[in-house]
Image (cartoon, rainbow, N blue to C red; front, side):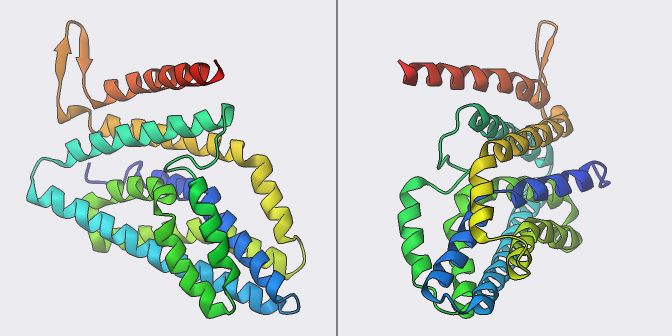
Length: 273
């Protein structure tokens, strides 16, 4: 538990999962569309507003990560021996998030909690976007959006913070910087692509809508896999023997997947009736 081990690839994979999160990409697209609709001849300023939006997201998301690492690290220090327990609890959460993302590949429903922006928030967001008139406004929006969209973006970052908490805030900082660079990379690529004329923001939005089920599938598989890794790390937190079966966080994580899938399937069938 002292070395980085599988933590490094896990952090990178979680950042990649977060980077394809439909929330932030959708809001960036709406921001540029809204700005260019009101300022059709100011393409450079629109893209600068997008860049300021990305910068704000990076900064606030970094602060989130540091808070998570500091909080969990302090918790581990205060309650000696709780590290495995914390890993186990968050492992079950990661597996659940993974399963529900995989569910969206088969039975997609927009606005799923911890996976997308809730539907009831979207009209309010569009009104806010329509009022952005400057690059500075894009920066302020980035701060606001990162707070506003926390329920649909926090999952992977929370898992990353759990993995990094054992190393301490200072040692975790370089990994959080890397995590956030990967997180905002697609948004940077979109801005550059629009600026040089490779693509249009409408094309990006259409691509996201067309492939959103696959984005959820990829995110779900990775989240569930990392959840199982965390559960495996935490399997010694407790042991309960039921005959030949050893009940621990890892075995619970394994059982959790088919149980959740069965519950989801039953709910889906009841809705169809």
